[in-house]
Length: 162
Image (cartoon, rainbow, N blue to C red):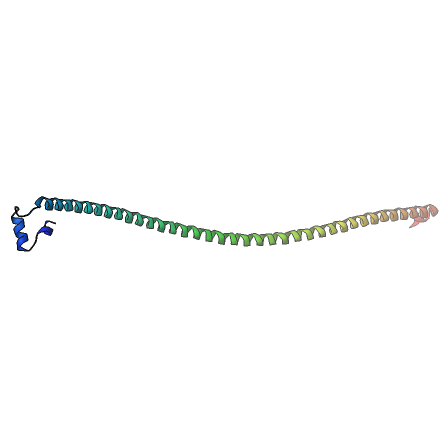
């Protein structure tokens, strides 16, 4: 910065080498010091700004990494949700198939109940017919026994000869 105040003219060189001719040497020195101080302040501010930029860039990189991790997590969750939905669809299909089979089994059971009732009625009818046939058979046997006694009583000697 000191070179800013050097002049290339002969008069300028003479001024620097001869302080008695320069009316404001202290003013020039204090201005140079002031400019040096300002330059140091600007350099310090520039360094601070560069540090802040570095911090912001580091935070930005961290945020980008976190964002990428969040995207990866979201993709994993989306994949898990898709799989769960596919499984739910498969389970729904299995449930629908099972409900259909259950309805078929219930219909078959209802048909069997109806057939069972019909068989019970038929068996009751057969049992009743069997009971009536037995009663008729016993009555016929008693009637024949009665007839045999009656014949025996009416022809007592006849039965002994045969």
